[in-house]
Image (cartoon, rainbow, N blue to C red):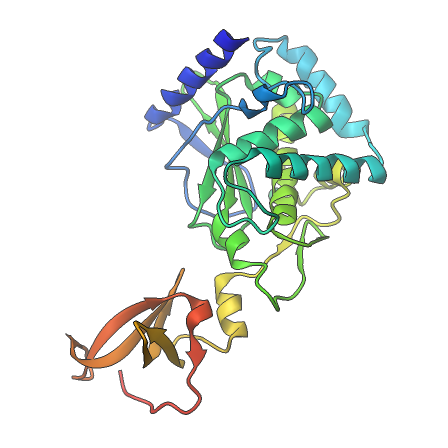
Length: 325
Ligand SMILES: [Zn+2]
């Protein structure tokens, strides 16, 4: 077993997807996002310290008879219904185990996440909901995980990469920006897949479940569409998803809730001083222009210094003096 784990670890390090220039990228989802430039393969191996409790890491029984595994997976997808109680129990257990095992996800409203966490989720969900068939069909190198800061509208994305020799690899990406922008005090209720999420971990699990259904559909039928009835039936029976949309707070929404848009006059604290300026751009942070003789000259002939300020640290400046820019 140790040898197998070591072999998979090594194959993860020198992942063949490093040379994917010749690969054809097939977009799978309704989601537009950035292309999978950075790929990581952590391997679904962190359960090794307690095998049996979460099921053994998937992929270790590869190669398998793909026809048999595909039929078995299709039977689960088309007919299996664990029941609401079991689904709740299994998903909560997966969440608790992730909290207990991940070096990054230490609390339900976690502050950090790593592609390896997605790998842990995959191993756990595949073992508990799909009898490990996805891992068997994918083999040790068939799936990679990615966190995307640049996906700002969609919560997740599953992508198939087809090599010139016809073999397929898959990538599951999760949008960290959306996860981390949500769940601040006072935010409206967050729902993902039609289910209320109490915290980031709930949202992560619901997003991941949605992507897992995409992956499983692709493995069985070579296509996947979450707007179609087969997908929705699977997502309902296996996870009680009621919708294929998410409702998370995006950055722009958060900024708008604070009354801050481009052009808003704001104040913020910087090294003990209270500065006044105007929002010029909103991305991960707000770019605020503060008038300063030492700054660069703008088109209005005035000089401004740019500050990059987290949105939460900005206060709308209701009484500030306007300035031209
Ligand atoms: Zn989808």
